Image (tube, rainbow, N blue to C red; front, side):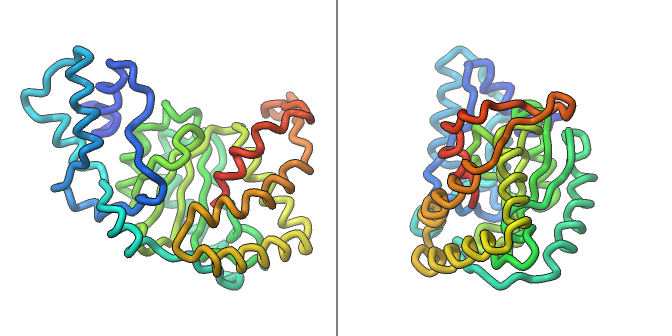
Length: 278
């Protein structure tokens, strides 16, 4: 087996057929079973495995791909997901959140060292002092690219994270320890990408403006009450506020920083990026 681990090996087999994205499912069925459950292989994986054979990939006489697929955390039924996924709860600010981030940062710095291409940042509402938030520590780790960091998916699993291909075109997304009880979200994001810059700028805007932060808190309280069991609707309903804040920021950067320079009038990217702010 390659040093990249099961997912890296499986990915290389997909690339033989020109497949550029792992199979995904509806966001509403995002619950992931315990990683020790290796008995259920979803039909979607079966379809992709069949696609390997249809495009002329090597056969799998020893069942290597089947065993690798079975070790990837899988999804139960939609009904089970809706019953067990963690509800949306917005809590008052907890002064322990920064310390919890620092502790997890040290763990991830060791576990993901091979793929880290920049800083490990505390993002999301728990990173803004005084701001009410879902009590989940959001952590953003800089990587060179999504392709180069794909083997890190298995490394993050060893650190207790469960992967799900949410917004897989812009990041690798994980939760910990389970979908039913979340303490951490992990986002592997290409360094200096638009999502990377937008997350930091949005966080810094809230840190710098207490009135803006309070407006955001009140919005989240209302939406959490309205969409307690619908995370997709909760995120979409916040996107207008996120877009308004991002639209007010000048994202042009100096070449000396190594950051990408965007035209001030280039705002079409803001709408889809705003849907990445859970």
